[in-house]
Figure 1 (cartoon, helix red, strand yellow):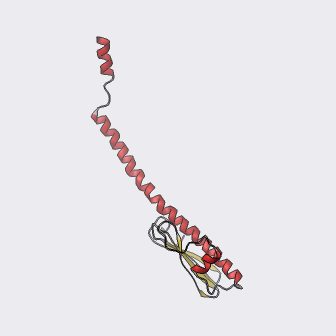
Figure 2 (cartoon, rainbow, N blue to C red):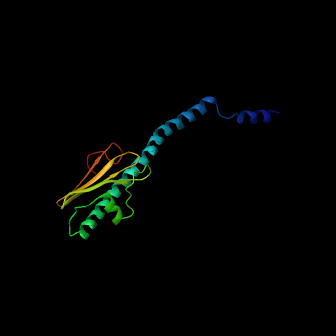
Amino acid sequence: MSTKLSRIRDERGFTLIELLVVILIIGILAAIAIPSFLNQKGKANDASAKELARTAQTTAETFATENSGIYTGLSTTKLNELEKTIPIAVSTTQAYLSGASSAAADEYFVTTTSPTTNDTFTITNKKGVVTRSCNGTGGGCKSSSW
């Protein structure tokens, strides 16, 4: 009988305090980790919008090459005709080309928009001088340039 009683004392399990401490630790770790994971989608969409802007820039240069070095007539539709992978329709799931134009024969701009953060990324070429700028508060636009 004494061996049976000692075995019962050895198998008593966890106390309520021990369980509460473990739950508290898991809660703290979740509070730290979950916001980091939630922000990753916005950063990924911003990165996609930046890459789309670079693709649109290359396509704008192709447009000029086919038009004797002149950017006049550049538009989102023209860029989409030259490169079918450039989306120009407003989307809530993927980055899209929200603007493209030429103010003069030797300059243009292309603008893309990230769907989750609504950050916009613009590449401007004025007489061969290329600048990049962004507007927004998402993860990919921490300053005015990128």
